[in-house]
Amino acid sequence: MKSPLLAVAAALLMLGATSAANAKGCIKGAIVGGVAGHYAGHHGMLGAAAGCLYGRHHAKEQQEQQKQQQQGQVNGQGKL
Image 1 (tube, one colour):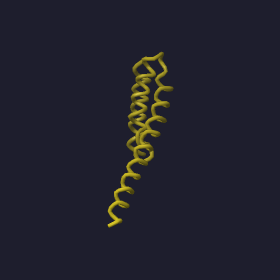
Image 2 (tube, one colour):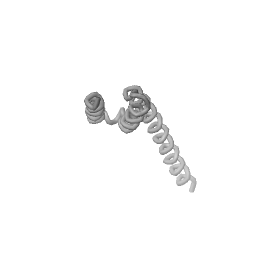
Image 3 (cartoon, helix red, strand yellow):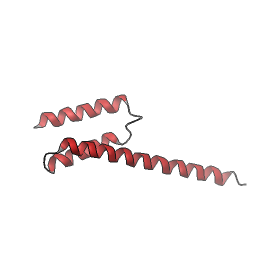
Image 4 (cartoon, helix red, strand yellow):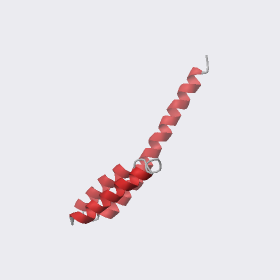
């Protein structure tokens, strides 16, 4: 039972090391989702997939908010 979970965790860590720019938020979400899915009826893979999708969505929202804040600061300084 532990070996599939360890294999998934190792695969996610290797994936995160190779493509960190595209997987922002995916690794943390997949780990949390996998653990939650495992304890909620032995659906660790499904939980990991859902956690990855949510993590990527959340990271993208945070990135957009940071861009908007930076644009607001630039616009506010340029009006002098």
